[in-house]
Image 1 (spheres, rainbow, N blue to C red):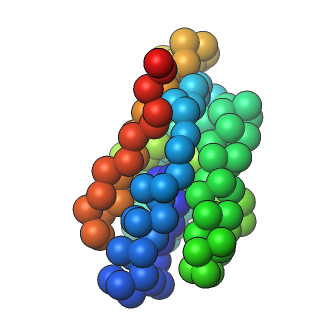
Image 2: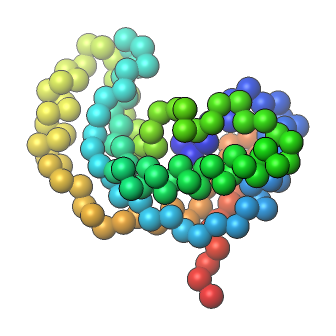
Image 3: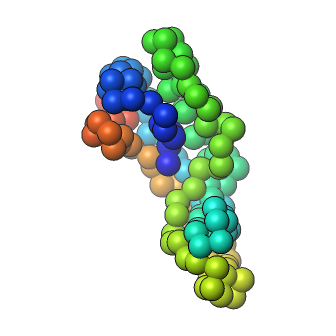
Length: 139
């Protein structure tokens, strides 16, 4: 998740989408660091892959640009992304009866080192209202 946009009404979400569409940005190279478990509740345990530290910093810098654009447009940011969990991709969600420790050990043994080949973030989307945003392309 790039930004968490809970607690906004539809009219404000449409304004947020309009603001995001004005922000020019270049593709962002990211690489992954490690797989961990995130326990939201006993029956909702997520296996997530975290971005490495340099990628976390690049993504956070981009989100701060988006948040600054929202603030400049008079849209308050309820909770800055910097105060939330790190950037990640969810691999799967299990319940407490799942053998979590064994699975995590097996995953980390299978992927001892992530590829250092960067993946480029070139686009992102909002669900409500559905809007798609793309990075600038090279001339």
